[in-house]
Image 1 (cartoon, rainbow, N blue to C red):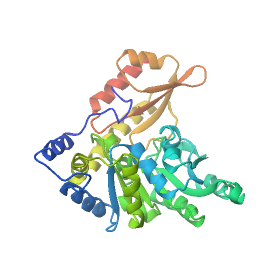
Image 2: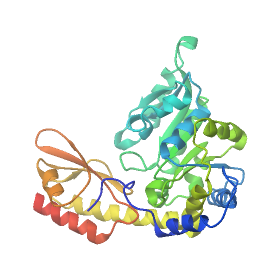
Image 3: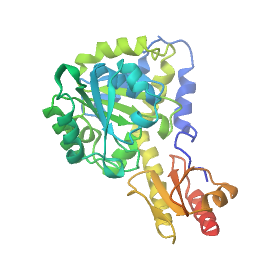
Length: 345
């Protein structure tokens, strides 16, 4: 009954086997390995982007911070939703990597900004000329931090608004596979076809040991990214072990199958929660992450029964919990949690 995070799940057997196979004999370092050539070809095919530049790093924070720095100057603003991971969970890495760019928080319900909430912020920033913060970059997240998803049309409307103001668009896709499965859209429809310029494409939360891809759909800035990655200390010498993970992850749709299992278990859990009296869901559940609210005392009783998740206090008499299913979550695990919840309630 472990629903604290999809970061906490182990690695898929196919990923572990690929890493072990990559350990056989020597290989060129720093991304010159043959497996990386395969990864580039796979991502270009999956995203219908034959010119895309593709780079690997070991962490989502590195992927996001480097991507933002590539497009946003030190005097620029990164427009992001007010609960975005880049704003709340990366220890000011975006500000550090950009050399001082400011995050401008855009409100919006259920983890999503809208054109109506973004437009006033775009109009406000840069109005003071040389004395003020300048426009820099739009950053979206899919799956959002509330567990909801942007459709291609929603992404396109926001990216178009940003582009009209001269801004490129970044997408934090730490759970991008889950968003693809949830929306039924193609990777291309959720990214460059909707106006996304650069994508942080996650693997770690979905069955990899630790690998994220940065996909730059216009390769004009590829060389600058290489320099920034090296200067930041994120060019891995034994790169083949990153390449092996990503190549196996993308092979024969493994990344989508893993995400489909996580989403299916998320739906099973959400449906069970919705049927319990006294339990409410704070946001619509689209993928593998949900936020439940229940009576005070429920959390302690669930933890005593062996359940693990992130909780937080709400108004008097109520408690909140974030629950995340993973690629290896099982139906019996979900059912055991719901039985424990019945007892706790």
